[in-house]
Image (cartoon, rainbow, N blue to C red; front, top):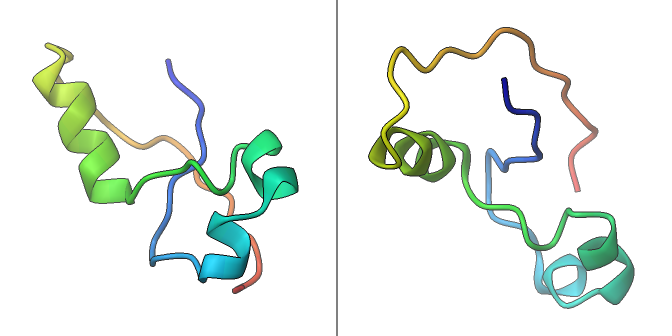
Length: 58
């Protein structure tokens, strides 16, 4: 099981370039589809999303 932060849309530069956002694992996050593909490319099979928590729009 993996728990991580992914994006549904690109972040504005003010967040992407924020050290605080980077430390909080937000500015370094990648798009959800890219994240799932990366996991599958690493050899994981039957990749499923069991639960999601949405944060307010930036």
